[in-house]
Image (cartoon, rainbow over all chains, first blue to last red; front, top):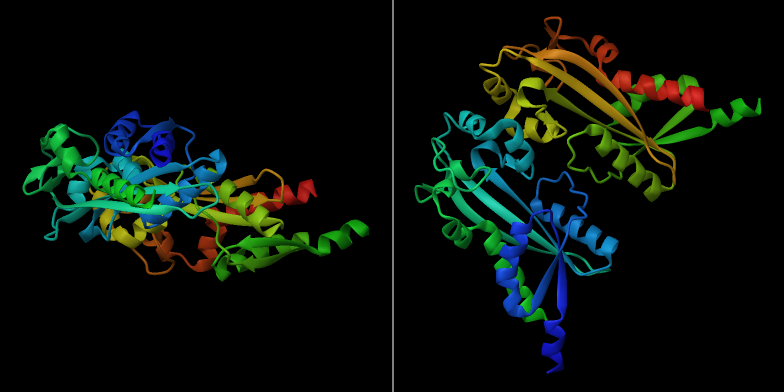
Length: 192
Length: 192
């Protein structure tokens, strides 16, 4: 019984500026007795080719800084024909180039494979970070379609339907962030 | 005399993997009695829109880590019509997209203005970093020209001549890195 009592009181700090991400994570983690607390302190995001290194560094930095159990997340779109571009810089590139210029870069590309990846970094103070990756494999559409979602959603398609054409529930069930969160939840359940 | 003796023995650690940069900086700093020592330890490079923040964070990190007076440098190409892209991610973007795709993105752009910027971060242990910026304003050429230099040099032109068409001496006298180094040298000369 003591075990369950401890679980009931367990809180993880989610370092993010995005309240929507808190709600999405709570839906998956609250059945494990985990309470999430948002903290918008930010953390240094490294220039690294792999999201894993960025999330691990950020989680360790935040765990040390706050002296609490923390999680952070980072995500990106990796286009195979462009060597993984825009990858870890997806948000920066979207703000500057937008989807029209991404389509222009892909104009003559036969290989349209692309992967949406999300990595969650989790860390306790003094420990090494753990990382949990979720991904969705799809293709870059020939044209922008649908106005749901945000960012690259209208040009990323799975089985011929873009994320911009999907409802939020459908997209969330398929999403890279959902898959990463489920991996974190499985690990927390087994370990604690 | 004591003053000059101290100057003779002054050493700054240049944290870089690039020996060529050491020689370029030595030519400008050695007349001030400064000796440069290369250290290839690397430093965390932040994802920030401004090179200044990246260089300042890197210099402070390295000064603390090595407990020595250090300098670091960071540079990038900022294309006005693309909102400053590729900016701080210039090396990553060059490796993935290359100059042909940069030209493709610029195909129908009338505004071809671009700036090569270099920021040197300098820091003593326990102090705030100082940053020194150098820049060259030019244009994105209509086509790649010249095979000297590296990176974006063949598509960046000043007065109709690309950096790829210039000799190394000519380019160095004009370069953003040279200008940033001169600013650092001026500051060190006045301050010490």
